[in-house]
Amino acid sequence: MAQMEANARAAESDADGAALLGNVRPPDWRNPEPTGPYDLAILGAGPAGLLAARGAATLGRKVALIERDLLGGNCLNVGCVPSKALIRTSRLYARMGDPQELGVTRPDGIRIDVAAGMRRIHRLQARLSRADSAARLREHGVDVYFGAARFAGPTRVTVAGAVLRFKKALIATGARPMTPAISGLIESGYWTNEDVFNLAAVPQRLLVIGGGPLGCELAQAFCRLGSHVIIAQDDPMFLAGEERDAAQILSDSLARDGLEIHLNTQVVAVRRQGEQKVVDLVSDDNKTSVVVDEILAGIGREPNVDNLDLEAAHVEYDVTTGIRVNDFLQTSNPRIYAAGDVCLVHKFAHMADATARIVLHNALLRGRRRLSALTVPWCTYTDPEIAHVGLYARDAREQGIPVKTFTVLMHDVDRAVTDGDEEGFLKIHVKEGSDEILGATIVARHAGEMINELSLAITAGIGLGELGRVIHAYPTQADAIKMAADAYYRTRLKSAVR
Image (tube, rainbow, N blue to C red):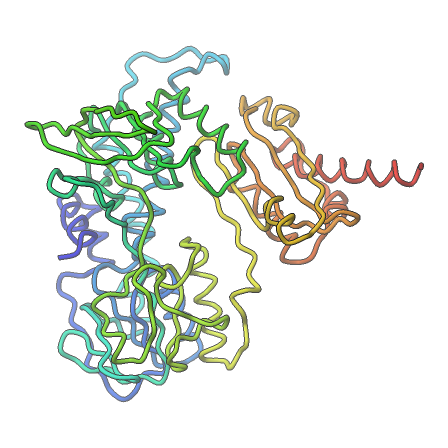
């Protein structure tokens, strides 16, 4: 049984867990009997598969949706939803730990109830799963099949002993956590994001392997919930692709929270010692060992391309990079498309959504929408958050594009000051000699909310000067964008005066 389904059944002991399972994998579900070819057969019911299924049914097409584990995929069951709920709890507790800076006396009796926090996660999952429950999808006209899908030819797929014929198909099977190649790790036991949302208590000592978004988010959350967290990252900085000063702010924030940080460090071996785990770390030529109770691996994700018999469908793939698609998201079989984590470099739920929309237009409406035309924002939900969209300054320079950067420090933004959220900055990169926005990075408590305005501006071709004419509600932290636009105007005025 897959890990996600095992987690759901483990949560079934409470009412919300049972309600969740009833929505995402009803115990008494009977697969329909396939009749005639489907206009669209979808493999995988994560964000991409669900959107495509609803959209195709709305268009009046005959749709089959096949899921081997749980409806909702990683995002609902072991990813975005539970992790952000856990982060919210940890942020509240951290804020309560030092309320005097906001003029509040710390109340007595504050304690962490991890089990209650996990029950809250199940309650939220049960609520959010209603919209795309198996019963709701069936009412919407989608034939839902549970079971492992395998291609039986270029236009056929099998599931639970049934053969489904299709005119077009979409592979949206997502991705799974990567297993680090570390001696003794598997034998000693370790967690991924698929294991950490049904805990009764946090471990006393936790090693997090990996300093990417997942590793940093969960390391900070568990530290704030009471674990002594050690984080090991083989690169010399966290979030290796982000701006260096953004990564440094995050590193400082994690250190203040009490994390034990090991950068430029490799985990080379793990061994059990009773109930504990001894982990060997190597940094340069220095070898040290740490003793922990649990290990969480967050080094990345790999596409789910195995056990699909893709060769029978004439679909080319790579076990590391996933399904090979063209700019229209077609595979090497022109009848079959792919969307989401199984074929993308940027493995985000919002990218799964966006690429599913492309497939709907191109596969069912004879559209010609392109993957390369998308403007992709993303956010790491640490505290402070780190969000980005478009080009980095280094990317622009590598492409020979002259760039000018406008920077606003959050300690100059009135609302950030009043909120006590002064750490961070906003950077907007524009093409030299114009107000064309090439990219932006935001480090702030609410960076994930703020980045959307700049993503819209890039997508719609709205320049930084034009953003300056937009009246922003005062006081908000997004006023930093208005301040950057004012800085751009000042350079134009100085030029005019000269």
